[in-house]
Image (cartoon, rainbow, N blue to C red; front, top):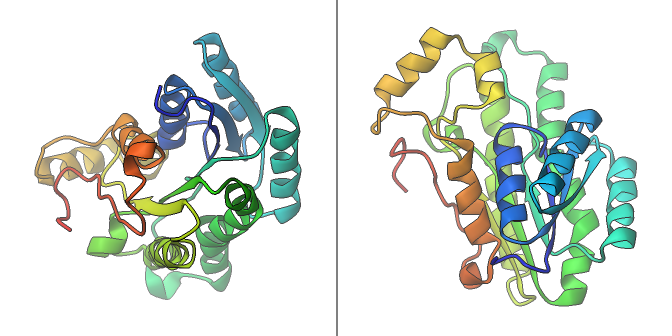
Length: 248
């Protein structure tokens, strides 16, 4: 129970990697606020965590909307107290040739994948500063480390997440707050299955060093470590969880 007594927000927490992180945090004793643009999904996930013996609450939140972020954060504070842990996981992904990419598609990717990290972190950070303790874990992408065709907007947004993480790690290194990021490799999630065909998924698996896709639980384990006291001397770090796709 390494996170007992902590209050955590997990964005995009209703499915895939976010759901696995929410489940792991609840198992480790944290109160988990599951945020997702799918409000019914967030509430369902939270109810399942409670049924399994955890403490959780679900919120429908568009993480690119400051007003919704502030409302949900204030609600958590009133119910449970100040926030100690934040995982910025919410994001979108798609494939499109660079020359076919529209400005609207670029802006949407940046708003959801990068601007949201700025917004949520800025709203939550005062709680951590007041406590002199906090953990922020941002989910980036191994695509920023290797490059990826037809994903310039996605790679740029996730590359920004890594830079953002390092900048805040420097800025708040004396305040008891750590900022780290986890770039997942090829992880089998509903979003992945909706994006790629079964044949494409299998091809990726066969080309990977471990000859398997990652599991959401693999990412959750890394996040649980970075959110714990065990990682108190780690900040500004990129913890690659990718099955050997990219060596730091």
